[in-house]
Length: 151
Image (cartoon, rainbow, N blue to C red; front, side, top):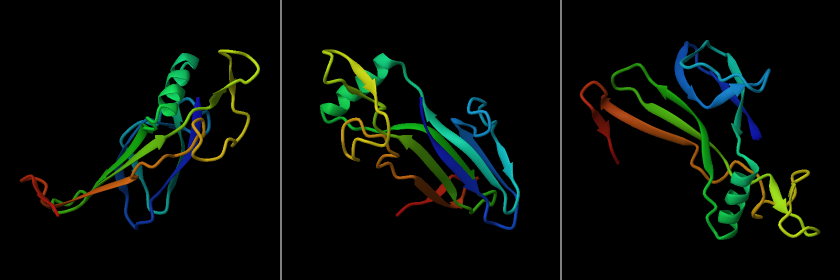
């Protein structure tokens, strides 16, 4: 498993209700955060965004990245839908890219866990948050009538 910390902050002066998918409790690192979440004004949620694979799956991801398929894996999301009929809808997709392993030079067919932040960003095995556009926003003239504003 690799994981990255996530912080959701409500900077508004009102309660907001959002749906969260794939986030786990920061305290114990295993309990999924139930959805929907009601977050009060000025309140914060601390969570983990995690990606878990078997060794064989990590090797497959490494080999695909080595061939140029560097697609990041979306592992969690946060959705906020303004309750107003004319309000906006926001979606944040959280992705983890890279793999936590690399082939060993000493043993043919052997693999090792990368001990730290090395190798440098851009390397096949580098772990990072990827190049995913984090926020997707949609505007509406009327949600109830399905009238989305397009540009």
